[in-house]
Image 1 (cartoon, rainbow, N blue to C red):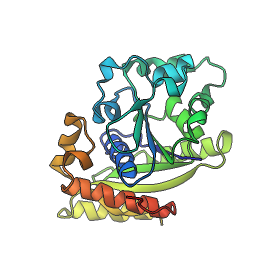
Image 2: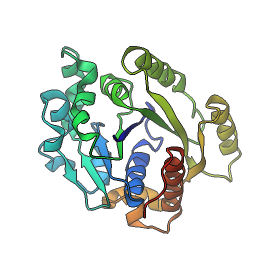
Image 3: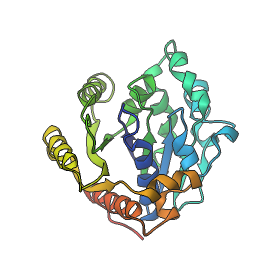
Image 4: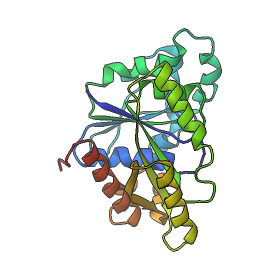
Length: 259
């Protein structure tokens, strides 16, 4: 049974999609069958794997709103052991359509249920909001991974996120846990960076990964080439950091790299 991890932060620009794409690709490269689910209407995780979101005929919108089977929208990517459920702009209206639907909080959970046996890990890239789609994801996830940028106001809004997770735990998903917190856009030369790191560790004791993701040009370039950074430039600092983080992530899940 695959483990489902939601990558969540309602703040934009924190490295959420970058983490979703590169964690999923790195898990696959280390030998575990992985599914990346894009439920962000911006579809950046989709294009980050080289899929033209404008040409996607059926997306996670159809899966969530119209009940199309997840298998029918699945895309096999050229990257090792990595498949994708793509998003496109249609998803932008899904929140309004979900409001009046029966079982609106479990649409994603029900849609992904048949796939859980086929994958070791399911990584879900959430929209930068705490709306109905994110609540849907939290209702089906085993855990939540929170990327936090090493910048001023890094912790802004995180109390609200943790409250949402607690509410979901109480109402829909009693087993959901905090997977961990990943520090992104790290620049060790700045005093502010260390202040943010200390603050985040106080806010999330024992939950912050020791691996940090640096600011890196290759990491920023890779999505425009439709590739995870591991495939775009394997030796770049960004690629090395995400592989190291993935090994730490797997170790915490009692898994060892297979290749």
